Length: 504
Image 1 (tube, rainbow, N blue to C red):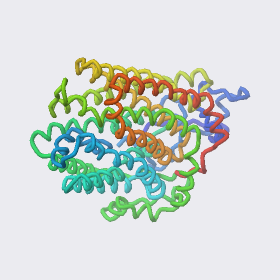
Image 2 (cartoon, rainbow, N blue to C red):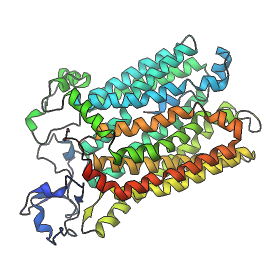
Image 3 (cartoon, helix red, strand yellow):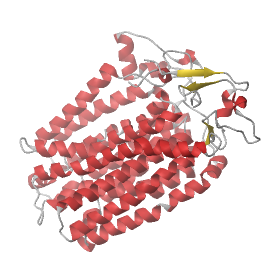
Image 4 (tube, rainbow, N blue to C red):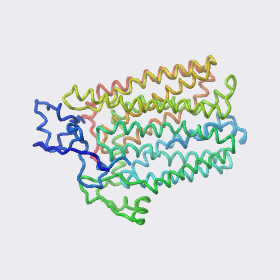
């Protein structure tokens, strides 16, 4: 099915749709008046959405193979097993906190693994990296299920973290490839929900399975899930990277041989017009210090993820001992709380992100600034901080587990809402380097998640949960200043530190 597009002709070329220096976009032709008062006739020849006034960014080609002309066609594996630390601790004669550290290297490796995947994505395409990511992750989980001891198990989980993070960074590139500007926020919200709900969905399933089988068979079932996703990619996956500027660079074909070459990456190797690996590495290094990425990612989002992952990896250590005495099944059910928070966050973001943008465009002559997206982070900060306080007070005073569930759900809601707003902002700032910018965003949030597993439980033991989670809430509120700085200075930063030359 083709997307409905209206073609209207204006006298000037469509290069005026985006200001290359400031990133300002012209979105609404009916409201647009230029800096000197010129009207919509100054926009040139441009295709519009079916409403007849929203400009399509980017402008689609007339090629039916262009993903923009087509209708719409995990991270959960890493936290699978967080409900079985006690069982492994008994087998390996270790303490539960020490066994839980087996997660840390894998979480950390999702950061560099994402950067490595992004570099390959820019050169070889989206589909082959997605295929190899799931296939190799399946192999690593099989290894983990057969591990002879803690060291071997941790090594397998570390390699799993290295390979399985690709979907978290490829998603933003695929959204850029397939959807117009005015469609992207909702798609980012849905994509973020799928990989953020995974860390809760995995333990929810494994917590029930562990009642019937041992932990090795439990991991075998996780391997089966990875195998299933690999088969789905083989059966229905498609390449979304498409060169509109030079269509002859696209290698198209059909048949099983072409399909196999596309999956394993040979088509990407043979493709021309794409950046070389050294060029992509150079561009990645140039993007790292850009303040409009570095400041909000390191200053705010990494802390949000640090404390969210801290709860996820330590919750069993709080609810299995007295006074709660949760069974494996009860712990598994508790993971539904943050999953519900994620779903509610998706519903919120489905409407609010577009509302924020539309209100700005209607009051700014049909134009848009990327920093507008960051207003969506404010409710995430408020709800997330409140959720941490509620969670800590409930543990401190041994209140009903319902307080834990609500606090955890509020925290996960905050994580999704903040992720969507910042990811949409980053895509607006780096439209031609979506995978690279997404991988760096992923790197910083996973760095926070990696570190927290080493001190979360010890911090609670030393100072008590009320102080621990109260301090975390205060940090979330305090680091929001980095979002304010980005809103105020973001446009100047983008003008002073422009993005590298476009890649794809």
